Image (cartoon, rainbow, N blue to C red; front, side, top):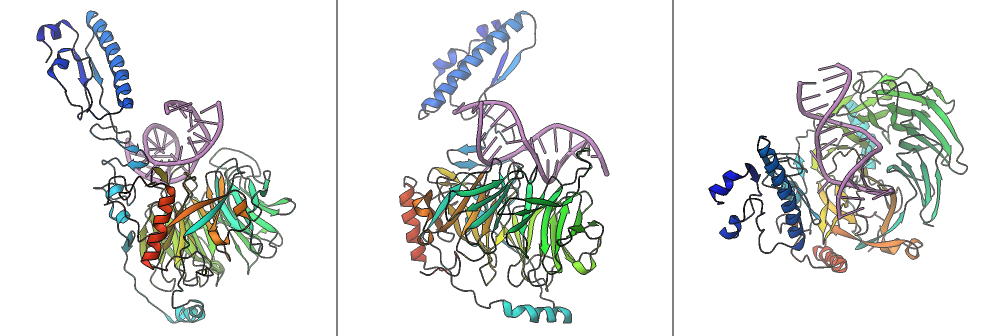
Length: 567
DNA sequence: AGCGTATGCCACC
DNA sequence: TGGTGGCCCTACGC
């Protein structure tokens, strides 16, 4: 302790220090409180520099305090404690340590949202049967449902086909959007065309077989392009819904665009009146374009006459955003909507009116997307901001609660396009979905956000796709309707992934190797603190080789990059 | 390397 | 019930 005589002759300064700092010798203590304590011996240079800075700051504060004392002012307290940047409390720190993110222990788990543990020790992160919460499910059939069921069942295969995880996937990248990508759509007939919309309202057309061949239409919308759909009647025409309140109809060859609807004909009159269009869908049987706005209303437009049919219908909580619409592929009069009122709702288009929904599927947070399964239309998959994918195995069964909840990191961030889990339209068993992952993992020194392939019948993580060069999050993903191709929108960039052997033209261009992990074999969480297994000095090549080996050892042929894959 | 910023949901009053 | 401040692992540009 500093001598009392000296102490009393100086102003009273209270210094809070890091609790983990150690006092190295009593001699140093004699130097006075303004000298910072030495850190542990193995601390690096950076730490020392920080200490020096703190020392200077401290001394300056000390002098000021001294002056203040002379003028009779109150003593001051200087805190040298490192505080958690999340909860501002001392004793721990949150944030990236290298490529691993350390959660604040005071907050609920960032992954499953339950208190008492962090992401690192979350059971949903460690187990191989990845994050499934069983939900009760009863299969009730009434006579009408039986008829529907008989109509649909032949379209559902009883046995899951064996599909294959490719060892490697190649990736082609392009960046022409100046704002983040919001939606993607594959061309219905031309296998190499990908359409993309962005936050600025631009529409991109990319021929990814030629990689650098792209067109960007920038004058169709003035702000966020939220959803788009190809015209069922003409595959050279795309409809798009935007936050500027219009539906556009664009010819992809010429870029000529016409407006089907404008909800803000009088321009900007303030946020309470400005209507934005989010959800969009086309009922091909009825030739109707369906759109929904940010106030809970659904609009129908006849795509032949471009005339709005009927009045807007309140389909979600008044004033809430309706972000998704989907017509059942088998029975297009069945409509699924979802939005910010935490519900996905099923409707019969033949009797559409407020509060007349057939079913209301409750969620704990905003529902980013809700889709019928692509072939039979008998399952429902939703993505909610509570970090759970929800699956209803049969729309003819009990829809009171989901058949499964799959914990998966995809929650909300205002700077990211909302995540949407998408079906694989080629999977005849209707059990594979793709969804981007929010939280990163330390893949040998790099924090990466994989794109996850999840078997929604078991909740199992089947494959994860990532590239050491792509460090951004990929919230927007779409699987090709016919080919073994995955498209991703990540920040302002677009990526096309396909199995190595299938990458022909692009390989000589701007292509990259990436790795695909088999979900089962990954060791993490419990193994070591950095969330990865212990050979952390491996480089990317080793990483790749290792996982290929693991995949083969497992003999598991569960993933798919399309049922067409032959190996 | 470090800061500013674009921005949406939600809790809180 | 409406307005508002605060964030939870962003991404990019200066």
